[in-house]
Image (cartoon, rainbow, N blue to C red; front, side):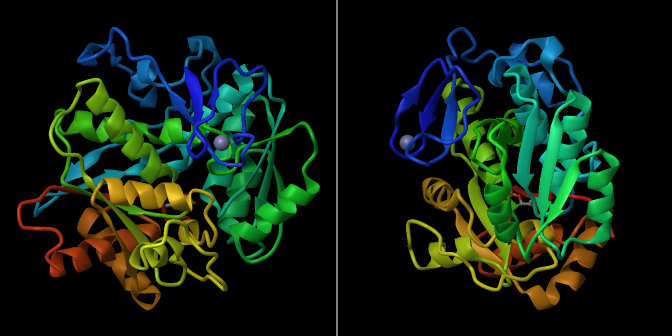
Length: 366
Ligand SMILES: Cc1ncc(COP(=O)(O)O)c(C=O)c1O
Ligand SMILES: [Zn+2]
């Protein structure tokens, strides 16, 4: 296992302390030696959690794994070749558990005693739960606007909660100001393992589709770890010969109340610009200045993907429609995905008969 900078390509082989960003300030990505497992899906275990893919995840002893049973969520086939990945069934109610299981496992294995992160809500709940299980102190920085249900859920796992500002960006600034030296920062993409946990979404989709891949994946995008992680998984599976043929076209779906990736995509920029005065009821998508903006735009370009907005004013109704259609008690991020699907069908970007994966990333908490 080695670490490579996503931007300057510097390679870090045997780090002596838990790694954050590359010295150049950009995210690091984990690379593996696949020798001996090319074409060999038998390395997948019987676990009914994301740890079934342990062989393609960061190297950790079995007894060091911090797990609450995350992952291996259903992929539900619907009419019109739609499949819904139901991530609401994860231990704390969202897909954030995949990244947190991995990040907290690795942090613990590396001797970390305190963790901090800013969150739009679900990541904080999840980090609190995994840190409690691991016996690690957890400091969660949330916007003041956060609904009580998220605060309660985070508090229930014994985390220290600090409230600041209107969005995750303000909360993140506060964290940087007040961070102690021995707090390990697990903010989105500031350490390499949350992406590794999230990439299991891609492995599961491939396995659940019998080692074929969908034509299109529509992802509700905030910081982008799921989008980036899934794309990484497809490249890895192709390199190992686990899948063949074309890879899915990746779709970034955001609310028009906070759409920095859509704006950059449409104006053919290589990086995102901060989205001022962002507002959306899809709380996880209220990420006005994502660190991984350029990385997401690369994924869109490499996958022949696209970025689309949902109308914030339609979001309550869109979410209700998605809930009725799927029977899943999903949060508003799923309404953004549903809008993306409808607009791309209407525009002819998705054709009849193409297989499309939609996401219900989190449960409705309020
Ligand atoms: C329910 C839900 N969906 C989607 C997202 C966006 O995820 P990401 O930051 O990985 O793009 C979040 C993030 O908080 C979320 O809570
Ligand atoms: Zn670098």
